[in-house]
Length: 87
Image (tube, rainbow, N blue to C red; front, side):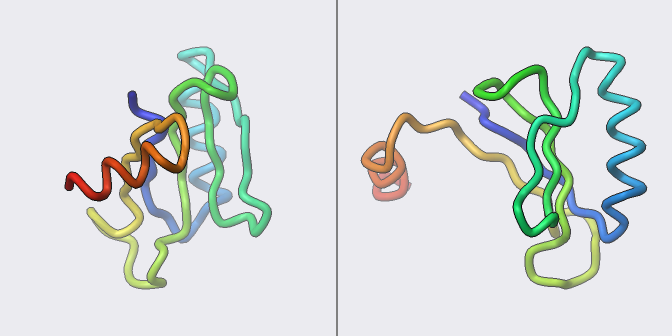
């Protein structure tokens, strides 16, 4: 059900090294980087839940809640719309 969780950081390379080593203990590896380089995701494999780090989206301070995100895995855009409409 959970697709990914994100936390914000302005030092993505430091966070990448930290979480890369930490999550390797669970068998995870870096599996995806956004083309703009502003988000890095770790996991066991594509299509499974991931943990990511990203630059805070509003360029505000990196603090609890700014850059933190949890995404639900939806099967298609219609399901996303149905969830949005219900919420």
